[in-house]
Image (cartoon, rainbow, N blue to C red; front, side):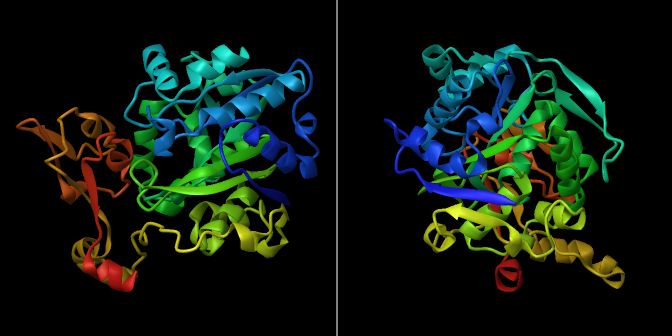
Length: 379
């Protein structure tokens, strides 16, 4: 399994195109993945409407460079995604999303198509380990090729929102919380992501790590200038490299563990070959990752679980100074544990499953994540 790392100092000028050409050369070039006449879905991370400098979404100038490569190979480039879990998969939502993320200009300047197709289908997954069927947007189902364009970010639930997790955007927006509700356990949720990734089977993954996000991602972390592009055929192998760049053990990522168990990755992860920039030059020193997730406890501890949950798990809390009462968090909560009271959101922690959808969704950074002292000391 081959993954490439290349320097990309800036989004402007010819920097993205030159970095992409270097990254794709060991993989066979864009022609290895795109044939003349094929409809190619470019699937960025479009969590929500956000300015490029917030590092929440895949940068439009990197997407533009990929569009131009696809068109140069004779493919028809279509840009499409379904936004985060608080937003319906409607034409109006997509118009605002594309405009807010700068993709309307990309389409105007390149002639690429922006997908406003709001249809989706329920697709059987007979070989799925955790889910046997899943909802997929038609933009993906109607494409001949999918190129996966994730953003290099941390994630408070899955730790990394990289190549495998980016496939979750193929599930229509408001359906996403249902999967968090059905699969509150991290390993189960990650297994579903791998089921989805295996079905979607993106031909190529290119990670936007020129500007990334550390800390409490994927929507409220800290901007980090990294200057990197990472590419590969296997999303799972790409995530192995991303975790190493973060400076953490790849097996601490649940989706990577699932891929090893399924034989999608070698048991010896050192067999993932890296070309281009040396890994030692790409590793980010003091990269801030979210604290550990809820721990697994033996059966005899069950009576003490409420106390353990309080002492050892990160919990969301409304920042009333920032909360504007928009109701996005209430709509996105998969277990209906958020209500609006006196124009502010209120989280009912007794039923909170710690999926952090509310934190991920809030564009006003009005939901803080509280890390208990016991967690900081022992997790």
